Structures are given as C-alpha cells and as structure tokens.
Image 1 (cartoon, rainbow, N blue to C red):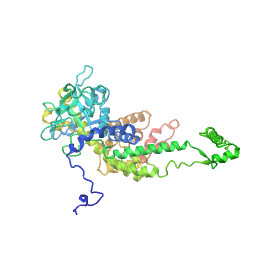
Image 2 (cartoon, rainbow, N blue to C red; image 1 turned 45 degrees about the horizontal axis):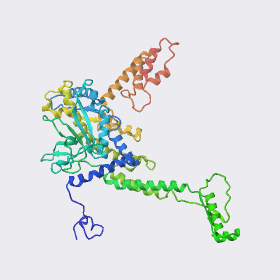
Image 3 (cartoon, helix red, strand yellow; image 1 turned 60 degrees about the horizontal axis):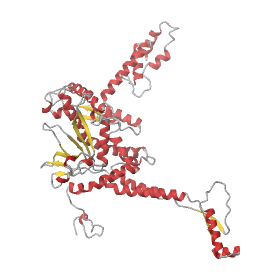
Length: 537
C-alpha cells in the first residue's frame, strides 16, 4: 500500500502503467521524426486542425504588426519627451525595412508575413528557424535580412551523432546554451537531396558573432529544463484528431451510401412455387427471377412514378438510420476534450457560437485571450525582439538612428513593445462604456486601450486633432458665429465639448441656435441674434 494512490500498483488499472522517466530530450527527440510529419498531415487534411492553425495565427498576430519603440530613458539619463521623439524616429526607420520585402532574404515577404510563417511553423512543427543574414543590395538601404529555414533542416550530421552536446542539430556548451546550429543545405525530404552523410551538405552556423550579434533565431516553446527542440501543439491530442476525423469520414460515407438506396423488392416465393405458377421447370423459374433482378435492380426512383411490381413481390421502404442521431452529441463531447488539450474554448475551435449567450461567449473569449496574450509575449521575447535588435544595430551603425554608447546600453535602447491586431468586441456598446469607466477611474490608459484594438494612441490623437481642425475650418467658412462653429466642429469631429455630457447626441447650443435663429435674408441682425441665443442657452 502506498501513501499516494498515483503510485499504487495493486490497482489493475495502474499495475501496467510505468512511463519512461527520461530527460526532456530523451523523451522527445527520438519521437519528433513521427510527431512532426503527423502534425503537418493533420494541418493539411483535417478541417478542424487546419482551422485551429488559422485561428491561432489570426488571433496571436493577425493582419498587422507594428513596432512601438520605448527606450528606457531613465537608464540613459534622459526624459520622457526625448524617449518619445527617439522612439518615433526609430519606428519610422524600422517601417522602411519591416513593411517591405527588404527584410526577407528571399524578397517575397514582409516582416508580418515572416512572423505568421514562423508562428505557424512553431505551432505545427514545433520549431521555427531564421538566419540573420548580412546581404547588401544596390537597390536597398538595408543589409540585414532574415532567411527562413525549415525546421527539418536543423539536424545532427550523421558523423557527429556520437557527440552528446549536439542535440538534433543544436550544439550546446556546458551550461546548455546554444553555441552553434547544424543545418543541412537541402531539405531531407526534397527530391534528389543527395547523400546526407556528405560533409559538403552541412553547414555549422554560430549562434552569435564575436561581438554578440545574433545569427540564428530559434523559436520554440521550451516546456522543460534541458529541452533543445519544440513539439507540435497537436502532440497531446493527435490520436483523438485522427480517430475523430476517420469516424466523421465513415459516418459521412455511410450516410451518402445509404442515401442511394430507396427501397427493396421482397418476395416469399421460392423457385418451386414460381415453377408451379408458370407450369414450367425450376430452371425456367430461376431465369424469371434473374430477369426481374436485371430489370428492377438500381431502378431510378422519380417523383409520382407508377411501379409495375413483378409477380409475388412487394415494395418495402428502406430506413438507413443515418445520420446517426447520437453523432452530434458524441462528436461535441470529443471535440470539447480536444479543445481543452489545445488550450482553446470549444466555441472558438469549432467556430460555433449557436449555443452560447453573451456572458458565456465573453467568458470563453476572455479565457482564449489570456492564451493568445501569453503566445504574443512568447513571440515577442523569442522572435520579434531579437529581430529588432539585429536591425537596430545596423541602423545605429549606419547613423540613421542616434544612440550614443549603444553597446554599453543595449537593453535601454532595445526596449520596445509590439502592436498586433485588435481583439475586437463581443458587444461594442457595453465594452465601450467599460473603456470609458476604466479611463475615468484612472485604471487604464489610452495607450493600453488603443493597443488592445491594434492602434497606436499617438496616431489616434494626432488624427483626431487633424479631423477637429478640418471640421472647425469648414464650420467657420460657412459663416456661422465663432462659438457655434466651434461647437459644431466638436460635434462633427466626435468630441464632447468641455462641461457637456459625452452621451448627448447633439453639441449644446447648436440645435437651439438653428431652431431660433431668424432667416438672415429677413433680419440684418441675424448674427447678433444668434450670439444672444447662444448666450441664453
């Protein structure tokens, strides 16, 4: 008898359960050769798995990716105003690299496309790999570029498999830190890949240059100490995905096959009875039944048709019992377990909100949002920040961004955050009211609220001020009194004038002015009258 039931071996259900107690790499590396291809096959051919990948990339990254440079100005003995100006200048320069294909060594993707590709690879295959290249080009103002590498190319060369410090292509020092990556020049699954044992087919890429510039960015989710490679998010639910997919296919095939059968012809006459009726022998009777089968088998049924039934037969309907009445409930239960294994709500995995009310949907999406935020932070720390550091080093050395004593203050200059696509709203009215209250209670900022919706608060403020100025110019040009024109501009630009209720649908004084103001053609003192009306209002 053991103190813990989990260690009990007398229970027949646990008596044969003895999992291998290996290290992180011992439990994983040998299995990756099967886990990764199976995960990719699911993402290709299983509709739910394919949807999960798209849902994750849409919610973690989405349709936009923007840098928000935030240097640690206190460490640099600067003030906040300097930090904002420096950050704006760095962001403008960074956009000329990240928003074009100059960032891609293959010249086909922007940084957003490369990030979506890296995230998808890390989720499905377990790893994403990029080389930070230095490739000057005559038509580009930047030389730093990213070369995407399929994770399968990161492997240990056959003649170095005996070395314990090289784990599936990752060469480590005595502390477990990567010092180099072994990459094959061709994908092992590519046609005519050649003899992989040939040393000319492999290249050793140092993790850093002599002065500390990163040369390889390896994105994977490290779950255990000493883990050198990542695994697919489908690893824990792969069996359920496979079996559920096959079951769905069999049910669909059964329903389609049974739908082809309309009815059966039944008869209780044997060959001897038919022979007696026709006054002939049994062989002739058998030929009669053969003729019946040949003429009625697979006969096409049409609406309103009359059937001539053969002698001694009756038409019996066919009830295939398909689709299975328990199919929906069973598949829903299975899919809920699979969704839990993927750390996502069932409603989001299946895109099915038909059985969900507002409160349940919001609770499910909030839970999903926590997971997406965790993945965003992981993506920032291990993918985007290293990319920004590599680019910023070139920008500083090219004197396009001013950063004195950069190498002594790397952290202070490299500090930044990233703006992804907004999370959206389930009920915009309720959530906008919540935003107003958070801002009024000083428990949130415009920066945080705008970032949640994928916007930069400085750009929002600048754009709203421009809109107000444009509205004010048009209102004043219309000949309205200055006070009314100003209030009208507030109304057009969507601002609530000072001292007014932000929920009012009309700016104070405007409606009263247009209701009470006399026709200028009949009253020469119309402007004075309007000013008096406004003062009285």
